[in-house]
Structures are given as structure tokens and as C-alpha cells.
Image (cartoon, rainbow, N blue to C red; front, side):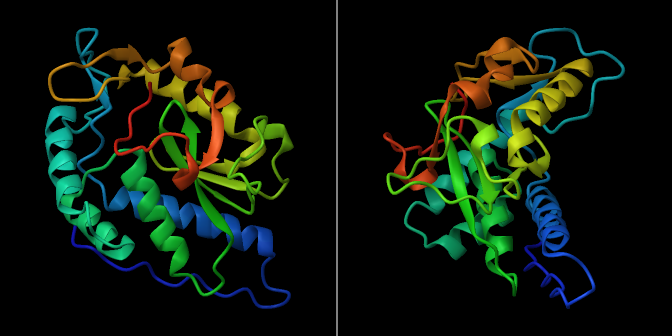
Length: 231
């Protein structure tokens, strides 16, 4: 679909809707915006790599095709500014967690009541999502335990389709992966067109990922993350 700037979210008027409800609605809209502009899917989600494809398996976009598109797009936007990168991502119509999170950030940046938001990287897993209403420490770190995140912090993770309270993120993550595994979805923890390592979506590696990785502001990770694949 052609790139479309996000519509401005309605400003909360006194007595009409709570700030919390408004921000949650904004978060859901950001999730939809990110996925609407990446209809060709991810390079690290697929079906049929481990088992025969069953009749109930979802019709996901081809992961190899998506990877070629993503790599080509990343080369183009290497020296782009943020808004130029977002436009290029939308033109490519494919993306992993990094691209999808950038689209979420762009959507939030265009809102009249722009919330506090950060791109968060789970390191060393190299997975990225966005959080609203949670500030990091001066060192760029968020609490290791999601139970210690703010009550009103909201995580938007378009790669796996999560939008909800940060404190519930590990539980929501596992529920999503269980549902994906039930219909045959597999996730790749490799990168590159030749070597791929596919695992069932509910494999322990994936299930425990939110808890066992540190949480950094994306641009303050110990190592650069030019690609988005979960190790």
C-alpha cells in the first residue's frame, strides 16, 4: 500500500475519555499502522520449514522473499534520516522487528498529544519493540523484571502483534507464541539467505526471551544492531 501519514489521534477533552484509555487507543492504532505498511511480512517468521504444511497453517508471506526485500531496503536507507528511513520501509512493504518498531515510533511522533516513548532492545537477543510511559536509567537500561515497570507503561510489539501493559509482556508473549505454534508458525534465529535455523514458535528459546535478556534503549545497546534477528 502507498505510504500514508498517520491520522492525528483525537485530543482528550476533559470528561470525555481518560488519558490512559487515550494512550492505549493510540498504542493500538500505532500497532495497526506498522503492520499495515509491512504486508509482505518478516524474514524470520514462516511456515513449513520444519514440518509438512497442514491445511490449517496460515498463509504467511514468503520469508525468503521478505528477506531479499528487507536487505535491499536497508542498503538504501543506510545514510537516511529517520523520516526518510520510515518512508523507505513503507515503500518496501516488508520488515522485521526493527522496521516495524520504527513505523510505530513515526506514528507516535505525529500525534498531537505525543506520549513518552522509547525503542527498547532485548540484548543480546536483538529484538526490538516500543514502550510508552517508561523512562530508562541514565545508563539507558530498563528494569530487568517487567513487574518493576510502571503500572501505566504500554508495550507495542508489532513483530509478534502485542499491545498491552508492560508488566504483562512476558505472559502476552508466551500466549502469542503458543497460538502461533498451534497453527504451525516457525521462527528463525538465523540471519542470511543461506543459513537458516528454524524453531517452532513455542520452543523454549523463544518462550523465555523477554525474561532472560537485558532491556536497553535501542541506541545504547552494548553492540550495534544493524539487523533484527533473535539469537
